[in-house]
Image 1 (cartoon, rainbow, N blue to C red):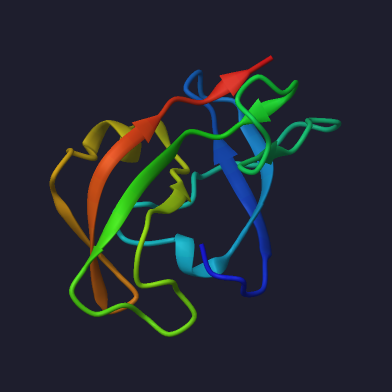
Image 2 (image 1 turned 60 degrees about the horizontal axis):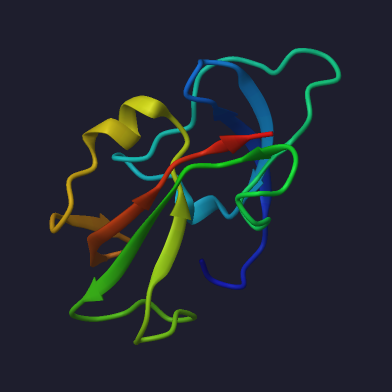
Length: 117
């Protein structure tokens, strides 16, 4: 992700539980929508930045490489890792497929499952 501002929204676990989640607004795309619903009281927040062995809700993520032009604020080389908000969106992602992102194209190179410890 870029080093831009963050906003608050929700993340839906594989089991359907809704968690509060802080993310960068550009992460929301037609192929990666925000889940519908509100978290229950005292529900912990989901995170994308901890290691997968960390306690708590670690989001599922997808890894992409840029195809062609790169939006301002992003590195031209390497991998971009994005949280995927819903299991439906996760299941629809296909490896070696291109996805529109900020007027550019990303190619899916890998996926990492969520962990809840």
